[in-house]
Image (cartoon, rainbow, N blue to C red; front, side, top):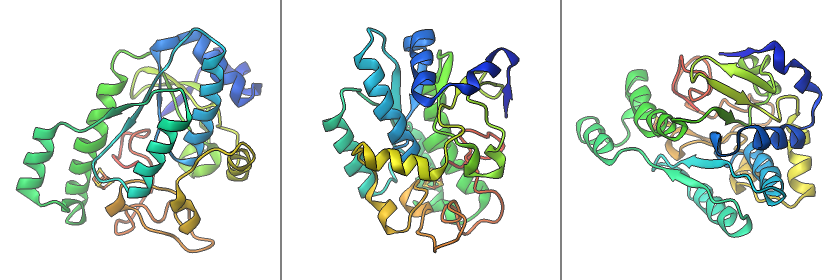
Length: 240
Ligand code: SF4
């Protein structure tokens, strides 16, 4: 859960680029941006790249490669590598943990039960995320309040008790339309699956396209009942 700290309340009026500039100036390499290559993260990456070109500071930018991503996501990762100056560190799950899990449970264990799906998300996502964030003081995210009810109160800057670090969400007050307008008007690369009915993209076996008017996150873990919430940001679950 993200808790708003009074001392950061006045930052709510800042625009996204100004929030990023503040984070870079305040934390530099002690700040980490976890890039999932979703639309919000592409906006942040584009802004961050511009901010870093104007400063001597650096920021830790990383992504989690679960080993089960879509081919389209890997194609986008390559385009980003070629277009931007920011270097993105790729964190993989530990090979031995994946080998043991798959050998004992099968390669598609996540369809068997919620417990096995959580085990897979834990080994392939949560543990690498924990490694990537170790020692950092601030975590830059693409969370938006309008994405879901559970994100409705996300502050632009707030203390995250789960990770004991400052969580910075420069796009907290943006709408989905604003995100896409920014992407298209700035020629920012994006995942081509978005043009095929995938509003939210995670691992290939756990994501499917949704129909018009459906909840944008209903294509994630569609065989399970309950929240489509991001486990990396809300630790009661392990989905993202
Ligand atoms: S989203 Fe699916 S494949 Fe990816 S880590 Fe979670 S359970 Fe495993």
